[in-house]
Amino acid sequence: MLTFSQFLAEQYLEEKLIMYNQGKRYGQIVFLAGGAGSGKGFAIKNFMEGEKFKVRDVDEWKKAFMKLADTKDMYPEIKGLKLKNPKDVYKIHTFVRNKGIKDKTLDLLLRDANSRHLPNIMFDITMKDADDIGDIIPKLVEAGYKSKDVHLTWVLTNYAVAILNNRNRERVVPEDIMLLSHEGAATNMYDVVKGKLPRGLNGGVRVVLNNRENTIAWTDPDTKKPMKTSQGDIIVQDFTYLTFKKEGKSIGPEADVKRQLLGWIAANVPKTKLTKDMMGVSDPDLLDNMYPKKT
Image (cartoon, rainbow, N blue to C red):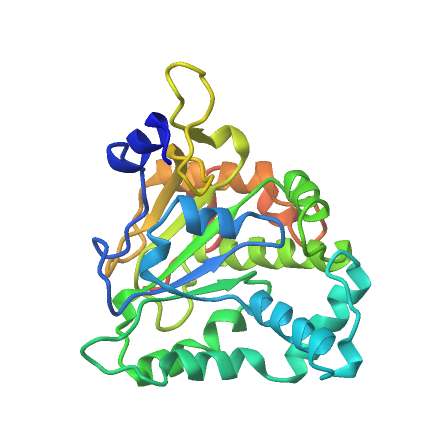
């Protein structure tokens, strides 16, 4: 039975949400990027209309294969592996990659698609490699998706926080792989800030700052504790994100937006040789001079 607070939360409290093309139920593609431990699953559940999307999350396939190995006497090479063991996580990652699961799952998602009712699909990726997007878009275009309906959202979390998240979650990614995922996401998104969008992506580009202090939950007026649904999920009142590019529009010249995003990047990505070039750039004019737009 619902408590009064749960009833109130589920019936009357409105959550702030990112809506892709005004919340359309068909024809939208979202590449949800972010390094390991950045909280993409939390973002899907709390910051956007995740229920309107089919989500391709390769991690779920890893769990399915491990379950088959342990219960059905299949795939002996991964039998007994544990997601809490970083070395085992690397082994199952290699197994799934060699099986070509990414391509096969995309084919399954598009199998029953038709031009009038193309399913909304969200791709949970690290964006460590630019090919995470570039290899997929041609198949989406062939299926009938329009470039203005292909969006990119980067879930940016402070690297130190992401390390703790990784250590405390069900699947523990080896820390060297984790660093590569955050470096790659940062450098590829920095290219986007410089104006280099993946070919075929002309939807909205957004960045969510997913640190604890940037997310505000509705609180119970009596207990002063965060209000939750009957499923135990918090009700988000507000969170921090910015829109870097609007659907179907070019990247704008708004200096304040660029300055804000450059500040977020400098404050949250890992400080390495690979990311050092983006650390000192906080002036959008300097960014434009370093990387002039083509005329």
